[in-house]
Image 1 (cartoon, rainbow, N blue to C red):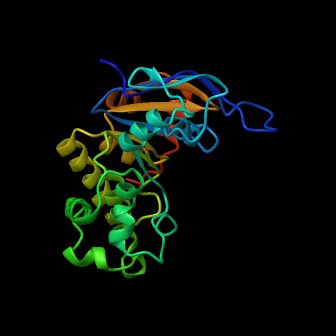
Image 2 (spheres, one colour):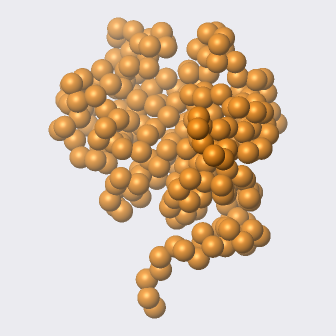
Amino acid sequence: MTAVLELRDAGFRYRRAAAPALDGVALAVEPGRSVGLVGESGAGKTTVLSLLLGLASPTSGAVLFDGAPLDRRDRTVMREFRRSVQTVFQDPYSSLDPRQSVGRIVGEPLASLRIASGADARERVAEALRAVALPADAADRYPHEFSGGQRQRIAIARAIVSRPRVLLADEPVSALDVTTRIQIIELLGRLAAAEGMTIVMVSHDLSVVASLCEQTVVLQGGWVVEQGRTADVLGSPTDPYTRRLLASVPRLPA
């Protein structure tokens, strides 16, 4: 099966950085799979996501989309890529423009990608809002009228309104309380199952990864140190770094 997104021996170095942020990373994301990227701060998780989003080009190796190198200079390729790959960011408070109505926010990808307009766009927006269980009048309201969890649902609606094949999520629940976190993870799971959508999620919370992701990739210092089925990686880790990550998870006293 051809991977929908792939990093092939990818390296990346930030300007003036003493060491590369990524070094020889190999990662293949198959269609319909859910993949978690875990590791401590500075491990390279967000850099991997930036490459998969086409926001940056690797300094070595390649990013592949549907088996072909992703050429950020090719407008036709990038238009199709933007239709196929969408993202949800960490902070539901700063990721939404407070001056725009929710309907306008959610519908923005339809306009910018020239997917739909007029009545068709309004119906697509209403459909996306229904999918994330927001009230019917949400389109006419503004972000400040909603709770943090509801704002993240708005951000997810914006990401799925173009019916993407891949959803990339950068710590999508870390700014939320525990109850809302569970609701958002369940929502992402339902959307993935209903739409056959591929999910790649960065998270420092191993319980979130265990709940949502079929596969887990462990990064340390810009290297992939372990990857495989989540049940295997988190249940029987082979790398000492993965074992240390699991040992650092807080546990309630018996």
